[in-house]
Image (tube, rainbow, N blue to C red; front, side, top):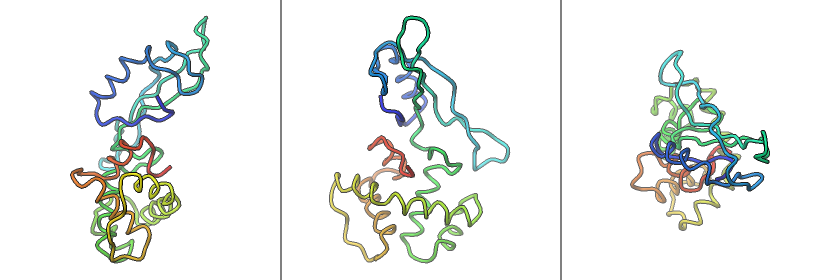
Length: 184
């Protein structure tokens, strides 16, 4: 198990949780020390004043004679962007609209992102900072498609779509396939 593990569904999360005692801790590498901790909840951007389940925290027990390290790891749904209120599908929609051309503001308007335009600009800026890691990961799956865009972010959005053509949400597919948060 890595420090962050992405799963697709609650069923898959429960399967991982049932195997905790046979799983090595990502930090101390001991087996038999992992326990469920608490659920990870966060704001639901689509519903006002509502929380959504984002995943489960796992704890390496250092109590008694277990000898664990006491650190925590996270099991997160791939449809979630860790440490962000925006979901992966919303970011995918924004990237898709950016790929069609125009400004960030027009892409934000067309995608219907339920955040302020300033948040859309911040998301794009954070993703631009992660482009080297994202593009390197995508290159391991194949070369980028020919692009009519000169902007690296728009080229990456096209590459993301070409690597995961059958997926409804390429951002969630990226996080699940590479087991790394796309936003870092």
